[in-house]
Image (cartoon, rainbow, N blue to C red; front, side, top):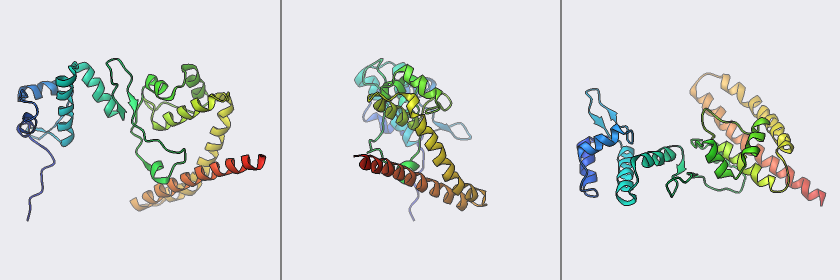
Length: 237
């Protein structure tokens, strides 16, 4: 019977794995990088550090950035923060990080609808990624088309911002887009009419079923909306 591998590494094992690539690495340096907040390994009840595979890769990223790019720790820490928020770090010091988002044809599948929304953007990052102006962003915020969650904007906010920016190129202002928000709110209400009774049922299976139905109905709603717009435009020709 094989013994399952541990889910963590000791600081000595981390040192051993990194030493072949970074000959000057020491336990003292690893502890220093931890004290600077670049890594945050867990601790055992007795106080020993527990490093995960992710901790090991973060250390490798830090050491490579120091050795090959000569980046100061402050910049490396900013890059790590960007990566934690779902961004690709800026290629030059002082640049703006960019979202790591897969492109699509504008029609969401139920799988895409269910994907984790872990992207977190600052206001300046959202403006840079969407090509909106500050005035446009303020305007669509006032109309309820976009909202900040806590201290950051998420991937849904970015999708809305990019769509608004592209639509505005045709001379359509944010005030004309309030109809989209009204229609979306009505569609949300219809979905909730179906899912609310499911959520009232007891058990984890009921919750999972409600989430599945929500994803499927949202995807169908988006498909129906696109089909109706396309059909209407075809009839108008």
